[in-house]
Length: 91
Image 1 (cartoon, rainbow, N blue to C red):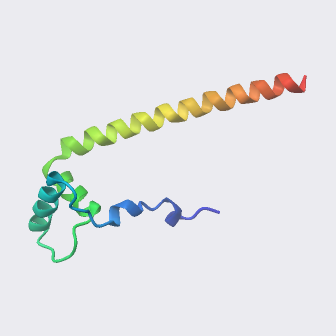
Image 2 (image 1 turned 90 degrees about the horizontal axis):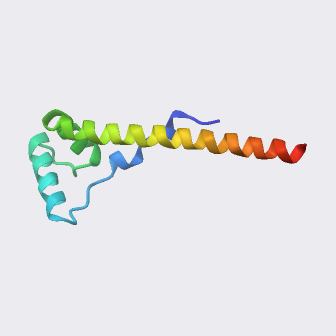
C-alpha cells in the first residue's frame, strides 16, 4: 500500500549546488532574502520565486500540467489499444 511519503518530493529538500553563474546568483539572492544561515534548498528558492516571480512558476506549472494530462491521455489510448489487441487474440 502506498503512503503519503511515497509521493513526497525529495528534490525540494536538496541543497542547491552552485555549479553555474545563475545558480550562484539565485542561491545568494534567496539566502539573503530569507536571511538564513542554512544551506539554500530548492524549496526555499520556490518560496521566493512564488512571492517575487509568480508568473515564472505559473508558466512552469501549466507546462507540467499539460504534459501530465497529455501523458495520461496517451496512456489511456495505449491501454485501450492493448485491450483491443488482447480481445482480438482471444477470439
